[in-house]
Length: 183
Image 1 (cartoon, one colour):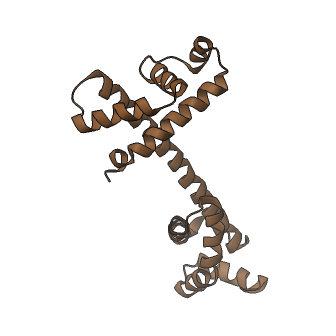
Image 2: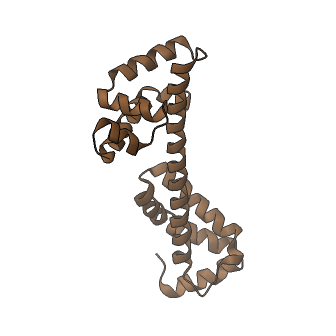
Image 3: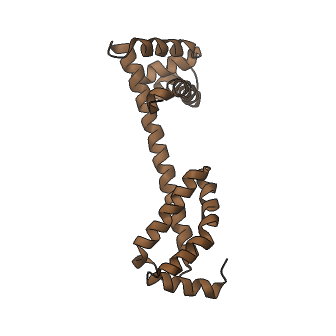
């Protein structure tokens, strides 16, 4: 690791787009930036990709960097923002997976366009769900009922309805992972 004076000098050199300075920053701080990113994303490869992207963003947008600021703090902020963007994207993908599962359930019960084997598997998995989980899933997905409405009809708390729905969707996700990801 570099001392404060060396870091300040390095920041000014990076601002002038000096390749050697950027290389020093990369060699000295890549590993620690990756460890920092891994605290957010819990995955070695994803953390490595995020840090690579952060270094690339620094290089391509060096004109935004103020060399009076610590270059390491600036890079940490880029890494943190990249991690948060990555996590947001994961959340969006998860929401889409749930929509795909809902569409599979709906299409499997409404028409014959779904493959017979897949439809049979869907019916088996739905039949294996606990009774309340099945009822909540069908009411929410097929009947388009609100969670509060389902809770009132079933005489249970809305939080219980959410729990039953999450568990049912998790079971479907586990059984239909190959459909979602083509595996």
